[in-house]
Image 1 (tube, rainbow, N blue to C red):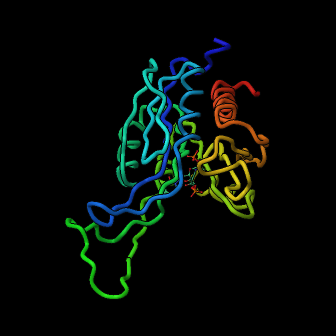
Image 2: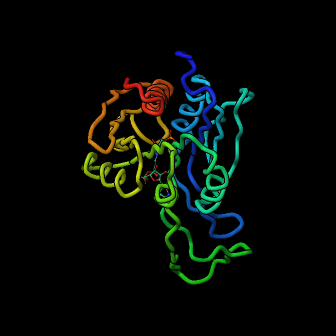
Image 3: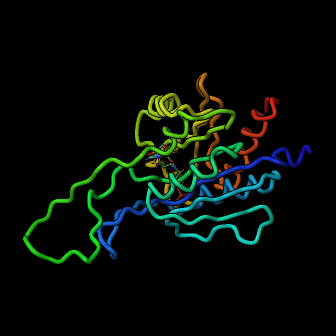
Length: 225
Ligand code: PMT
């Protein structure tokens, strides 16, 4: 049990970036590669959990052929919300490593948009905030959010933790070298409702994923670690 503290637990990990369509061949997305989310999913499997990855667009392959793993591919923030929400009631831990678009094009055209005037204006409308919406309906689930920041890391992370009702928030300074989008390593600061829990200096996303899931396991089973 010591090595498999998440045996019998159901974990959802979101990974990658959402894709918000303008037309059948064009879209808005971001630089999330999926590496952080996939590393967390692998760590959760290694600790014995049953894992569902809900992934948007990614640059790397998800873990494959692992017992206890399911993979759901989605496109938009709305699709990601629906996929996670379907599993939510029966989930023990949700880790939201995905980079979700805050806005989407107001209209997604059915056909390729034709070139016309010298300029064009794109109107965007707000997407659902998946973490905040699920945070509001949280019962016994353990909710881990991420915060991708460029400044005032602690302040913004603590604000997201409270607003989204998370148990832990993993903040990364996405402008720091060796951290954030696309890199093989990350540097993270972990906060709970009382403030800073720990800082994980530059390490591979695999190592960071494992530490995050160990922290979650310890808190879920009531041991401190
Ligand atoms: O995939 P990699 O290349 O490995 O990069 C990893 C990463 C930089 C994407 C990752 O470490 C990270 O920071 N993920 C969160 C990115 C993000 O969307 O951060 P945010 O601060 O904008 O959002 C805060 C939290 O709310 C996140 O958990 C996010 O999933 C969630 N969110 C945001 C908007 C929205 N509409 N719904 C959400 O659920």
